[in-house]
Length: 116
Length: 116
Length: 116
Length: 116
Image (cartoon, rainbow over all chains, first blue to last red):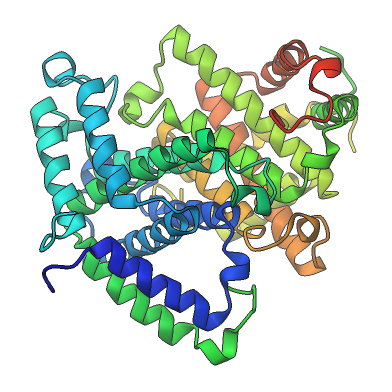
């Protein structure tokens, strides 16, 4: 791994170049990209739909590989969508984590399935 | 921004601590997390469903803020799910980008909506 | 219940009137309606995301009521989308059932989670 | 069309027999079925993701056929899920339509994209 580099910015820049080289910006409205992201997440979830929870944590090597690629697709669309919306994904995620820590105080929600 | 640090690993570690403090690992099977990710993506997409493509690229400040939080939620679940599956999300995404570059040669797919 | 009447055609007609009275046809492109349907399905699925499979079959009266309304929303959008696409949903479903019976012969797939 | 018959009850009964013959009831928890429904809706939506709204209302015969089958799959899972939850889908939908008529008075929401 190259240090001193943001993963998310690296992916953002690669995706910008990828779309520009193919003249695909015209299709990359936030509306369309949100649909594409959704479709990738469904392809990911499809691997788990008939598995028990325990089975979903113990995949065959073949499924593990397929799932890994679906996770990648999800991240790529998520980064691309954020870029088109001008959202700094890293900052947004760190901010949300802080908000969640306040919303779900550890001592009050411990072990409860109400939320997560 | 802190340099010399991976965004995705930072988020992964924060999410591990967050779940451990709340004893939420028991709910975080890949199956459940894939559902939670899907639900967040739907909450994101909901903002765009009645907008035109042009409108989706020109949000009100209020919607922009809401969308930013939904994007964050999506990333957080995606990172958490990848961690539970033992997938290195950065590596998977970079690998997928290379694969896509081969699958969609720029000179052949330029400007076509067939894919993306 | 009125007898001698197709449920799906009844709902189709009510939804046509509903949209016409509100001048909402302009928003009801198949693209938009497919997004709206997806969002409703996610709201439905959200009720099950942290439940075990057994718990999902034994809901509290409160959740049962909420789930019932989400199922209704899903059907309404599905009927509306089919109408806008000119698809006879009843005929399509009966046809698909026959196709599935051929695709998954009972004696070959019995008890297998491979499909369904 | 056979008159004097409910579409939804007919499909419900056929799906019950279909699952029983294949010993698939064991996989048909509401949790799993909600995931399967979601996956089918995503496969439906995928056809529209890079189309404009106008294009989504004017499909090629090939896409029209594919979309028709996806709509059927969505209805089949929706009916099956409702059955497993003991929800009368027809009644729930008619009830929801009345509720929506109250929630969105025609004279107040006419032509507004705020909701639908």
